[in-house]
Image (cartoon, rainbow, N blue to C red; front, side, top):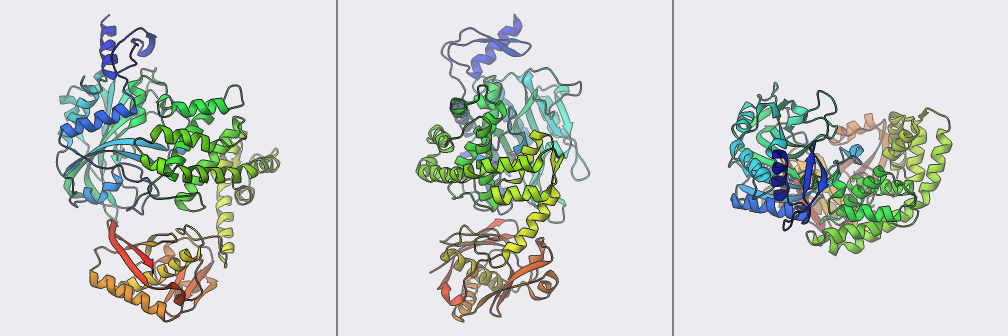
Length: 627
Ligand code: SER
């Protein structure tokens, strides 16, 4: 009887559906009776509660940053709420103060193979609160527990929470302080586990950056343990992580050392979808209200009688991700490089899994429309970009649908009775039928065979070299298209790169990132301080002088050996096989590059820097235009 009573309290606070009361049996909800007048905690409600809670604790609400990062060349997409905050975690004062809270759209592709299980997603929303050198472990942990368990907030039963804490290693000590705080707050030590860096350390995505030990909060689903050793961190699904509190007190330096930061920060992240699933006792995140209508639409469209659950889930996850990428503040369209290629791979995988369900007609734009409808209130940018999103999806779907069928037939012919697919064949599927490597890998896995991935990479590199020779359709990273304006800005980027080396008298300045659209160039480079106005003026003057000199732009193919003697330092960080293509701009600049460029600098017009800023420790970014 007592058990039922506890459960009832939890159910009331956790806001299960209005007329439902569910009773526990071995921790699983089995029975529905009635419960009037209580509101369901769906994602919208959870976000509101989270923000309200931290507002009460004097946090300022910051905006949801774009999914395509503005200021961080180390990642393709924003993988966590802390990413847009890196400069502030390193000490720059934030205009809104030292306590911040927000909802952040995030995209991670590291776990893409896990998508299809109950909890892993590529695109998700993360709730976060931050202390920038203000409160630390004690307050952060106490507030997390209060938000999760207090009846005013989520009302989760405390006895279902399990905790992990950093076990310590040669770089940083065991976090006994954190474990002690949890125990003082009433979490028994049997439910606190010490784990290593792999589990309880949040590190920078790039080589350097703020980092530190974390403590993760897991929710026990009530499922039976998979083995005797089943504990938080186990992948069987019994315990799933709902919140991570990172104590960012270190900076990882370029030499790999962990130095104590001057300010101690807190960075927390709570996955919205997972937490809603836990609160509502759902089997998976796909039952959350922002997923369900998409799943239902796919089931409707599926021709197969019993649609494969994994395919349903992959389509649902990937179409959400693709819609949010296309509908981002910073435009990305499908392409063969960087973010554009991630997008293309997501879209192509959706089409392939649609085919498994027997869906042969256009369906991506139909699903994307649902994604937009479900999220437009919070993300009005999706509404503004609706036409672009739908058009790009339609174009990409039409293009790939044509070749998918043929490619699948080719795959069957190529593999026949074989146990392993050659790298050459995998590359042919990539090149002639647009099959990303992981699609071929997935097809091979389904057939129980393997793919020679090393062979694929070799073939890919060989092909890249061949096609660099004067090709106008392939670009080395960062060009959005091959329009004349983009080409002009690309040539201007080479001039800028050399001008920076000369004006700043720093031979080892190299490109750390580049993104060129017909409107502007964006160039990231290694330099550890702000450029002065005078330096910026001088860089502009050097570039404009070279433009006026009418320098010819010429390309030569040469051995890497020879290029090393003729090209500025630094570019060899990239991997090249023996032959490379080098672009010469008169006697001023030489760079290894895939092109394309204009023929003569006089075509460029007037070069103008419009912004110079920091994007990460030791990395500056210049935006410039041609007038
Ligand atoms: N950066 C941590 C995470 O993403 C906490 O926000 O899990």
